[in-house]
Length: 502
Image (cartoon, rainbow, N blue to C red; front, side, top):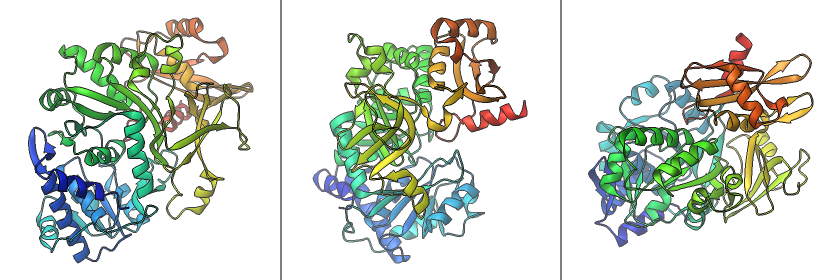
C-alpha cells in the first residue's frame, strides 16, 4: 500500500476540514491538500519522475513541504528529506548518493543548493513550482507495495558520511499505527504543531494526523520559538508536538518566565536524545501530565519503546524515579532484547547492546551492503545503544556503545554521571566523555554549562554525594554552550577534539 493513500481517504471523507495552516491562517483544506498533491504528482510525471525514483526535499517548514511530500508519494516516488540547516554542499552530497531525479527547495535554500547540486532544483516560491502544478494532475494515487521504499532518511552523520536508511511503506504504517496504540490518541480536533524540522521525527509524525484528519500547523517563524508555540497552542487547542529534550527544557524555562502553563498543549512527545530525570520532573511539575517519551532510531523510526503520559507523570509507584529514567517498554510492532557482543541474549538487569526486530525495522542502508550486514544480524537491528531491561520490560538507556568510558577495566556510563551533575543547581547543561589516560586507559571529564561561575570543587563534592568515587569527573571544563548537531544532539566527537587541543 502507498502510505499516501491515507491522505486520499481523509480528503474524500472530510474535504472541507482544515488541513494545513501557516501560523493561524488556513492554507489548505483536506480537499485542497489532496488536489494539490495530485497536481504535483502530475507535474513530476511530466518531468519524467517514475515510481521508485527519489525526490529530495531541502526545505524549511513551509506549507508547500507537505504538498511536495505527498505529491512525490502520489507519483510513487521516494522522498529524501534533508535537514534545512545543512550546508548546500552537504545537501548536494545526499542528493547525489540517493541519485535523486529532482529536489524541491524553499527560498534561502534554493541558492545554497543550486551552487553545488547537479540535480534539477525546484523552488516552491517561483514559477517552476507553479509550472509543475499546471501539468495534468494524476488521476489517482500510484499503487505501491508494502515493502517498496517511500522515505530515504539520511542519518545525521556525527561519525562520518551519513547513511541512507531505507524506510518502506510497511515501516511507516507500522510506526503510525503503533503510535496510536502505544504513544497517544489522535482525533480530527487535534493540531500537530511542527516546531522541529519536518525532515526528521516531527515530520514523520504527520502520518497519523493525516490518517485521523487532524490539523497541521507550521509556525509563521518557521521553527522553534517558545512564545509562538504558546500563542498557537492557545489559539488552536489540543496541540500535539514532537520535541527534543533540549526543547522541552527551553519550553519549561520560557513558560516559567512568562507565567504561562502552556494552555492548549495537549501532548508533547519527546525523544531523539537523553532526557534527564531532573528536567522532565520540572517540566511535568509545571505543565502537568502532557508528556510522552519515545525511543527510536532512523533505522526503526520513532518506534522502539514508549513511556506513556501516565508513567511519565506517575509519582505513586515506589519505582517511579527508576521508570522515569527509562524509555519505557517495547512498542506493539517490535520486539526488544539485550545482547552481548556475540549476539547472545542477556537476562533482565544486565547491560548490553539493545537489539530490535519487527515490521518497523529497516531492510538495510541504501547502496551500502557492508554497513547493512553489520547492523541487521539474523533479523535483529543492532542499535549500537547500550541498555538494560528490567523484569517488567522497562528499557533503560545507558549510552551509545562508542561513548562508554572504560577506566581501569571498569565500565562507566556517561549518562549516569551527567544525571548526577544535573542535580546541582549551578549546572544547566553537561556532557561527560572519556579522556585518554596512560595508566587507566581513560578517565572521566565533564563539560559544563553553568548558570554561575563554575566551582569545580563544589561539583566534585556533589558527585561524591551521589555516585561512586571512581565515576566522578577528574576534570571540569566550563563552556558557554555545548556543541550540537542540526537535531539538537550533543556532539561528543567535538568535545573529544577539544580535549586533544588542550
